[in-house]
Length: 123
Image 1 (cartoon, rainbow, N blue to C red):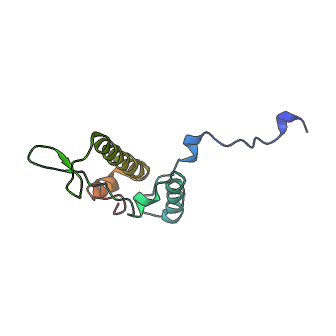
Image 2: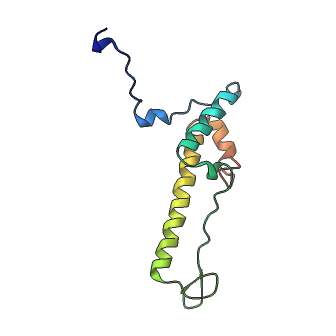
């Protein structure tokens, strides 16, 4: 057998690994859709957003002087404020990525029905 006729065993490009077929409007492919969607979301490390374990980090409260206060009432440092803001940004980025995996695979009609739900796990 010549090298040109051997089977190509390389993985497809990474973007095609994360493709989820569309959910049929009548739900007839729900079982296979659900398994594929869960597999992609697990592979991306996003299950905690889908199952509701991920919680939005609470922002610091502010006092009358507009200083950021930690839960114990002490003033937060600039570094602590920046770290918390990064955690909040990361939460919303990953939550939005999880939603996008779902939204890109459902009909516009279904998207309009679920878009206002307040968490990815409810969607």
